[in-house]
Structure formats: C-alpha cells, structure tokens
Amino acid sequence: MNLIHPAELENRQVLILGLGSFGGGAGCARALHELGAKVTVSDLRPASKLETSINSLAGYPIEFVFEEHPEFLFEQADVVVVNPAVPNEAPIWDLARKHGCELTTEVNLAIAYSAKTPTVAITGTHGKSTCASLLHHMLGDNTILAGNLGGSFLEQVLSQPDCTGIVVEMSSFQCERLVAPRGWPHVAALTCFGADHLDRHGDLISYAKAKRRLIEYQDESCFALVPGGDEESAHWTRDARGNWTELDGLTISDFQLEAADLPFNESFRMPSLFAALQALRILGKDCTNLSEYPGLEHRMQTFVDIHDRKIINNGVATHPEPTAAALASIKGKKVLLAGGKDKLLDLSEIISVARKKTRLHLHGEGGKRLLRLCAAAKIECSLHENFEIAAGAALSGLQSDETLLFSPTFSSFDEFNNFSERAQLFLKLTEDTPVSKP
Figure (cartoon, one colour):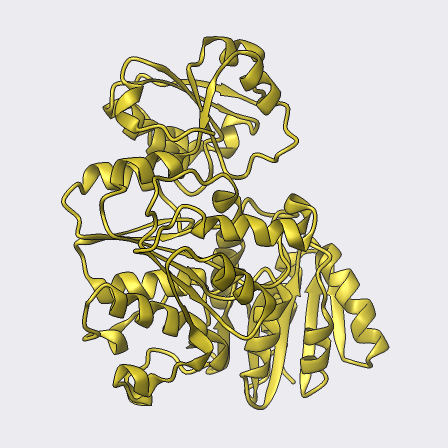
C-alpha cells in the first residue's frame, strides 16, 4: 500500500470493500463523496444484514453491490479502500493488482489528512478502548476519539479540521496495513500483549509484528509507551525510534493522584490508566477530571438489577485473560456466563481462578471446550444450546449472595454480527428474566 492523501481522490473511481457494522464504511463513503470521489461500496453480506449502514447513505449518489465482489468493480476502480476485516488470502488482492488499482484503508486516508495534528495511537490485546476513551475524556471536547471504537476516522477528521489532538484506537488488523507519514504517531501506546486473532495472523510472531507496525513510522521526536516486564515490551523498546517509557514502574503518586481520584480500581485495568496518564503528561496537559470518567459500555459495567442482585457486564471481553482477571477481582460467590466461537486460546487461567466459589453457564464451541476443562477440574458448570438460553439460566438462577459476571471469553460471530449486539441482548435479558426460587 502507498500513502494516499484524500485530496487526491477528487473525480476518481473509489471502491470501498466492506460496509461494516459500526459505521466506519458508511462514514468513509460519505467523506469520500464530500471530497469529490465517485464511490462504489461492495460487501459480501446481503443488504438485509446492513440496513442501518445503507439507510445512513440515503440520498448520496453511491452505488452498492452485495453478496459478491465482481471483477468488473476492480476494472473500473482507480483506488480500493479495504476494510480491516478482509483477510490476507482473499481474492480481492489479486484482482486489485491485476487491474492496477491503488490500495489503501480508511485509517490510512485519515492519517494522511490529519498527520500534522498531535496524535496518540493506542493498541493492545485488550484495554485499548478504555485507555483511548479515558485519555480523550481528560483531553476534552476539542479532540477526536477515533479508530477501532467505531465510526469513521476519516469522516471525523474532515468534520473537525480545527481539533487540537487525536486519540485513535488501533486493532492489529488496522496496524497490519498501516501506512503513515514519518513522525506519526506522536505517541504510540501498547496497553498489554497476549495471544489473540491467531486465526487471522497465523501465529503469535505475526500478530506481534502487526501490532509493532504502530511504531514503524515514528522518528526521534516521538514516544512509545509499553507495559514493561515482558518480551513484547522489550521488542518495542528495542525498535523504538524515539523516547520510550515502561508503564509497570509507575504508581498513582507519580501523577500526584490518590486512590479516591481513580475512576476504577481493578489492578488489571491499571496499565490502561497509566498509559493514558503518561500520554497526557507527554502532551503537556493536566489531569483535572479523571474521577469523572464515565467508563465505556460493556466494560466492567457494574449494576444491581431489580431483584437486588449484583451483575457485571464485561461483554467486550472476547479473550481468556481479561475474563480471568475480572473473575479474580470479584469477592465472594460468583457465576460466570461465557461462550461463543472458539479462538483456540489458552483457558488455563480461567480454570485456575474458577476453582474458587464459581459456577459457570456456557454455550457455543468455546463453551464446549471450557466445559471439558471444568469437568476435569471438578468445577460446577452447565452447557446450553445458545447464548440466550445460557444467559437466561444464569440470570434466573442467580442468588442474592452471588455476583454474575458476563465476560464471554470467546468471539460473538457464531450467533451475532459483533460483540456489542451480544452484549445488548444480555442487558435486555437482565430486565426480562424472572428469578427462580432457591
């Protein structure tokens, strides 16, 4: 891929591959139309699965092709904007090369447009959304929060040309195809690192290299923030072109803060907090509103339901490590609701933590594998036909002295379009499910 500035796309034929479910593709299409490009959108899913995105483009002169990426689209395209989810082995790459199309991504276009704006780019196996949203909260309204959190990065930078800063969350899929000007980003942060998305990247080394591309375009004026104390942090500090900081040596007193100032106190969330605080310091800003951070939906959201039972919605967790950490942070009796499409990651941490006062309600292929491990460890668990049945059983049987943790551990794609859809159903079920008598 080459670095393409969006201004170069006026009057050119641009093909967007993948409309997406979180507004990124639709926002990109609107932005490119405003820049004068002639836009076509193609998605392998049927139109019925993309109604919200399609409706958001009503009135725009944009052509749509669904359920296939026919070759004639590449014959007429000058530039192809590839969705991060498109796999590396997809036939579109050969088609684009065959017809001489330039290739880019929505994120790369946004970076080219906004390269002079101070930017903090955040990646990590988990914790990156919390870090990004927390930093954006502290920086204030005149900054942009973009990237993997949803919506179109390109549309945002076009609509806020006078913003004073950008915070962008970057997935491994987005990092893998990153092309940026030298000196971008001003600050790159790795919240944590562990095995994930190996079905896409093939192995842990390739996954790590994809994340590490975030510092590839930095120069001596830039900063890299790493967890510290692990092999991947050592790779980042070795490859860093500018300054770097290991976060594991920091404490809240280093930022003149006390425990009462913090928006959360779980130890496994501290790397995200320290990365945000250190980035804020590098940008020369003061921390004045940390305790007012409202948090993000589906990330350790704790509430008491109408039956006075404690429930934690950690629906974003599609990896064993944050589930194990969340489970370990809960005192007393607990119930874990987990399952979904299996990514074949190590589940031993969950088994270790679940030995203590824990019952499990499971579903999906991931749930089946976890069930076998629980049975061997003599941990109480039940396997259900699907997510809704599992959630209903967990909620109806939850006792007043137990805490229910919804932390899926596995991907949502066996039953849902994305993790948010699954988590929203869980929240609805917490309101609708009757309680069984003990």
